[in-house]
Structure formats: C-alpha cells, structure tokens
Image 1: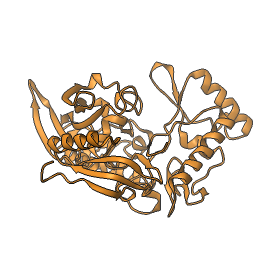
Image 2: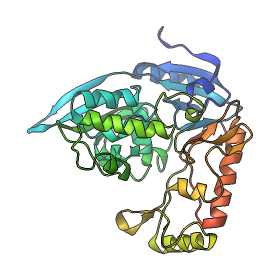
Image 3: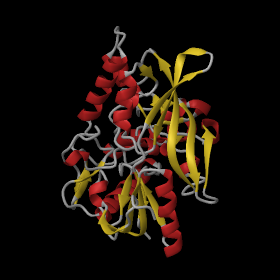
Image 4: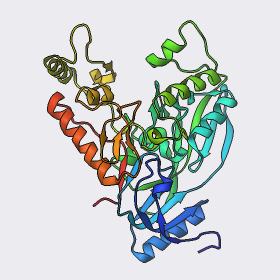
Length: 359
C-alpha cells in the first residue's frame, strides 16, 4: 500500500451516516484517488473480505452489528468545466464522486448553469446521484447526466458509461438493480444549460412563482426553504434531520390499481369526491401516489414514535432517529408501516435506503 492509504480497524459508522445509527466497520479506508481505491480493493481480496462503498451516508441504514468487512469511503474531489463542441448554450461539468452534492449544485447555480437547481438541499455526495437517479421538485439527474465514470469490480477496468447505458428509471438505475454492487462510481458528467431558466414543474414551486420568472438562485433558495420546512435540508441539524430522507418511494400503480385504492380510501372515509386521493399521472399510463399520504391515512401521523425511532415531526415520509434509536427499531417501524398500508390500501411500499450489514 502507498503511504497515503491507511486501513483502520473497528471504525464507528454511525457518525458517517445521516441516520446516526449503526455499528462499526471491521476495516475502514478512505480513498482520494483511483490508485488508493485499487489498493483498498486488493486488501479486501487478499483478506477475503466483503466490501461496502460509502459515500455521504445519506441513503443507508447500517445494522447495529456494523459491517464485518472493509468499508471504503470515497473522498475523490474535483470539478471541471468543458465546452460542448458547436454549442454556445451548453456546458459539460464533471464532478468527482466525493464532492458534496449540495455544494456542487450551489456551484452550478453560482455559475449560471441550469439543470440541477431543483435538486438543491439534498444530502449526500455526487457519486450517489446516478445510483438512485436522484430527483426532486420536477427534476431528475438522469435528465442531465451525459456519462458516469465507473470502476468495474468484475475485471477492475475503468470505463465511461453513457447515460443511456445506465438504465435510469424512477429512483433507480442499473447501479442499484440489475448490476448492483458491480460498479464503483468515480465521477459524473452533466450537460447543463448556460444562463438557462430554472425548471418550474412541481406544484409547490408553481405556487411560489406564479406570475414571477425566478433566477436560478431564487429557485435554489425556494427549494431549500421547502426542504427545510420538511426537515429534509442538507446539514439542517436536529432530530428531524437524523434520517435517510424519504424512506419510501412514491408508489406508481396502474390506472385500475389506482381506482381500487381510491375505492378503499372512500370506504375508510379518508377520500371522496371533494377530497380525492392525491395523485400524478406519469408516462405509460401509470399513476403516482404520494407515499406520505398513504402513511398518514394508515394512522401514522407526524411524530409517531416506536421506541427510539419515529416519523419526522414535519414530514411522515421520513423515518428518524429520535435519539438513541437502534437499526432494529427503524426496521420494526418500517415493517409496521408497510404492513398497515398494504392492509388498508393494497399497496406495498418500497424502501429507498440500502440496508448495510444485515443478514
């Protein structure tokens, strides 16, 4: 190993996650370049250890027992800007995987580059954004990702994958589905619009900017304010922020399934002609239902507690560590919510965070 790479033992992982939950890593390495990453992988191979690639710790739940292998924390930094040949209205921006996501979005906004402004305030690192196809307030990173630079763990080759190769869908990609655990994201390249206007597609933002043409900075400020009001702003602090953000995906169902859900809701007295089940039409005829609405109307209100775990006091979509919560308590609350929503509405919620170190 190089003098720069240090392998540490029994390193607590809870402080490196937004949940502030979890045991220790048996071995831990922080890598700042591809050479150190390769050496860390060699160590894991030689020791016969499983590996986990840690980014910002914002979309994971670590088990109380921790991780009995090597945790590799990505700390590769750097942002570069390139022109798009033949185009004066666009720029290619490449950010390395260890860049703080919200700070990167802030940099893009400050440089009048449009395309990511609605994704302000989201915790985590750049490297995590293509994995989950991060999206919020009418934008998804898949709309601007040109390529993703990855290390293929199968043959240890480094390659640049076009955005079209990443299998982007709602909150998913090949990186967390068909090719899960195969690739390590090293950098991401986005095509952004020079001096472009911000996207105003989400109802909350339409209401804020009705009759008003905002700048990118004004859009970022509005998004951050909305996220803060829901306890989901990056680096916000407080018990409501000790979470993995939105714990469940908003379910997408067929039109027929939606009608059945609406009928069930009417029988329960939680929806009707004057107060229909909130929903949004999506491509291919699907219907998206807010998971928060299902959770609330299944009897889990803001601030609901189960041991040290609970729902956020301002947003029911976030499961939170209310102080001293264990991973098992979070799992117990998750299972209770899933079972009740399925019982009442016939919809099985799907979690977003990855579970690390669980059998």
